[in-house]
Length: 362
Ligand code: KG4
Ligand code: ZN
Image (cartoon, rainbow, N blue to C red):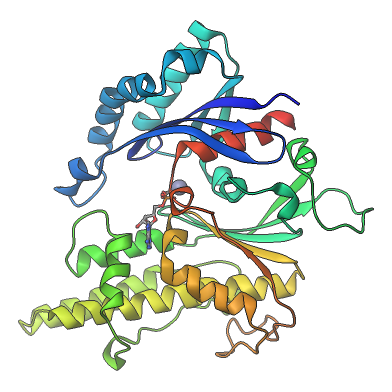
């Protein structure tokens, strides 16, 4: 069967990313991808400044499209573009260029939801037939932590695996089980990094500092389990514990030593990865899924990848009886999926198209 190819455009936040993605009815793979990252321009403000982001998207979108090449664009089957959620001025740049290309090349446009493509990023470079359902996936980004149960729509087959054709015909049922009540985990990585002193981008910086840090009683912050809302997530309390600690030190005219910064990063990161992983695992036990998965920007964190891997693979009784009302015994090994490349964890245009084709076929 003929390969399908799309041009994918992502400008929802601080990356101008355009790619051509192939689908050979078995695997989604990246043919070309060009991304302009705005890190250095936002760095001095310690934050993504929306006006600067949209201006840079406007400046960069044409060079990035040119890098892909008009000849390549002429031969794609369709154009996929992120239309929500995101920074309005930034989204508008992607939508405008998609409309121009649609008018010029007469290719259909597929509008894609950012959050859904964090789910389907799992499918990039991986055979669908390897994925075992039902699947429970936790997507953790700068803006959300969402827990989704992904099931097949039919129940007749004993075979648990699903073929790619079946997925693109829209035979997946996606149900949201839990969500962010306040700061998302990625946002908390960002804010804590700023508090302990490092400019944007922050998530990976915390991980680097944590490598040099140790467990330290002083920084053993409370874990927020939300026993009554076991599938929801709250990280603003953790942020406030760190904020208060630093404020009290400032009052006493103390500053953090380098080792204390690393210890805070270590203890903070352990806190977040434990809460995320145990909630995911225990939701998996309750719903008796076959496999679990992580995605979104925070899934680029090596410590989270390692921690959740250990939990998923080792049959064990989960310690720390939290959240209280969920099963404790981990009776089987779960299959665990992570985006194959770290590039696929964070925002990028490749995932847009995977979402685009699944949506189009429904
Ligand atoms: O999915 P994403 O690229 O964009 C949004 O949809 O928000 O996620 C960005 C978030 C940021 O908060 C960033 O700090 C976090 O992902 N992040 C990380 C790491 N790399 C990115 N957090 C922890 N460790 C990392 N290595
Ligand atoms: Zn994202």
